[in-house]
Amino acid sequence: MNETIKTILTRRSIRKYKPEQFPAEILQQILEAGLYAPSAMGRQPWHVVVVRGLDKIAEVNREVKAATARMKDNPYADYVGSESYTVNYHAPTFVIVSGDTTVSPRNAQFDCALLLGNMFLAAHSLRIGSCWINQLNVLNDEPVFRKYMTKLGIPKENQIFGCACFGYADAPNPTAVARKKNAVVIIE
Amino acid sequence: MNETIKTILTRRSIRKYKPEQFPAEILQQILEAGLYAPSAMGRQPWHVVVVRGLDKIAEVNREVKAATARMKDNPYADYVGSESYTVNYHAPTFVIVSGDTTVSPRNAQFDCALLLGNMFLAAHSLRIGSCWINQLNVLNDEPVFRKYMTKLGIPKENQIFGCACFGYADAPNPTAVARKKNAVVIIE
Image (cartoon, rainbow over all chains, first blue to last red; front, side):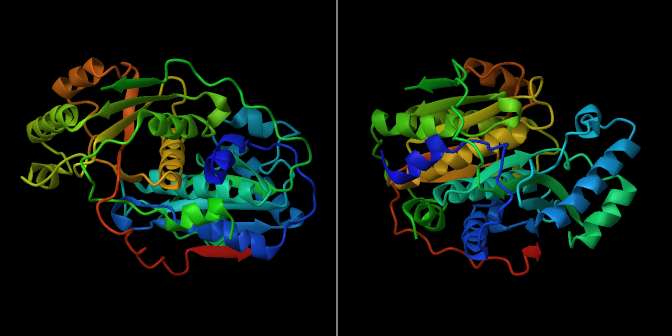
């Protein structure tokens, strides 16, 4: 088995992190890997905000909780509203990926997912854990949170399609859940 | 630079293929890598149809062209309608990834993209080229094509979120297009 496939098969979503930050040089490698994802028509409709440091992320966390609480039909209301919820599982780096749907209306969401997928694998290859976070995806149209997105530098045309936390895992690599049966049909 | 990051940075979308099929053992490695993608809540809402062989793929191509032509507002009408269009750039393996939106209504699309991204990287690490194909994503509600999807084994609850072709590249690895400037904001 080659190293790339080994990385893919052993990468797990990490939900317990050490508070220590990882070096900026490692972040740069992870980011570059993300930006080399393919995108529809090569349009690269993505934008990435990286929030570094537990104090800064605490602000994001407060804004996410407040915005979720203000919404009537937020599907994550109970989850995000619980006292123990944090957007980052206490990891010291939090990444918000948004896509410009005016540039790529049907495909920006896929391009952003591929960018995050590349970041996950690059991170794991560098011994950095990661986890996809969904709860911000439903806050794009909440007016106060939208202003906060602008404050973070997210372009006003963009929609958040996915977030992730990154850091050193504080537990052994989890075992993979069983893979779903009958997920593949091969027609020869 | 480690092998995983090298794979990520050198993987390109391939649009010219040799007609020769690659071995089933390689396909199995690519598929396994795909199925080890993370998914929201570990739900694995994905389903993968692999069509192997140029004759079989020709049938898919005919169905896609006919369905596109029948639709009123298909955004790819001109593109798919051109004589030179094929769903697979003449590659000998074509993969259709669909997701169950009843299981994961907000996130199946991202999970399917991550599955495809893993397949692309595993393929490249094994010297197999690949390219994401979008044109089937807009055919889910076309009634005749929907029947054809069922014939291919796609579950009736599923939506196609992405397709891809795989095969041996018939040209040197393309140069990456320039990466977009100002795509990243880092908040320390």
